[in-house]
Image (cartoon, rainbow, N blue to C red; front, side, top):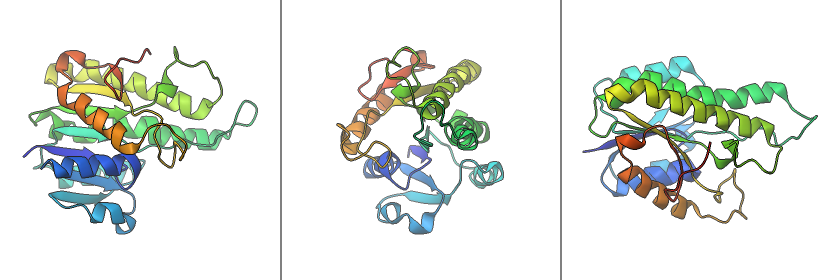
Length: 226
């Protein structure tokens, strides 16, 4: 049975990923900070394990990884994310900016460092970092959003370096843009439903090859420029 580990799985895209993989018969490891409040996860039928995990807590990440030493993780989806303060030039909250980097940039690398043996020992050997088109330097024509943009741009660099460093182990690492989705972060007026986004991402994840490691994909499978 193939397996997937998803961070930030208690709501939005993470929850939809967990539901989708569970329906398809995957073993799902769903991670979130407050499992007791994750009613959506608790209601999923199938082979699902819910783990209490704050991705910014290095000791907790290491503890969860040690507790899963015998588990193979075919796909690791670093989905947990934080938009940060929606402030413009001259208004930046630098402490919150640092926290945003902790969640969006440092935590995915921490997850990979702790779970690399689980992934490398699996059949699929795939790491998916959920980034954002807002992290593309070439696509930035709107300015602003310094905190979120910079954290996702940095995640893209982390993804590329991981792809290089883990290539010889046969591990594929990609970053993806889920689209402007109707989540708490994207807002109710966003043009893309969660189900359509995750459906597209599932198709992409299912067909991406090791030769495509280190690339930045839109949810529909097209390439996004750095």
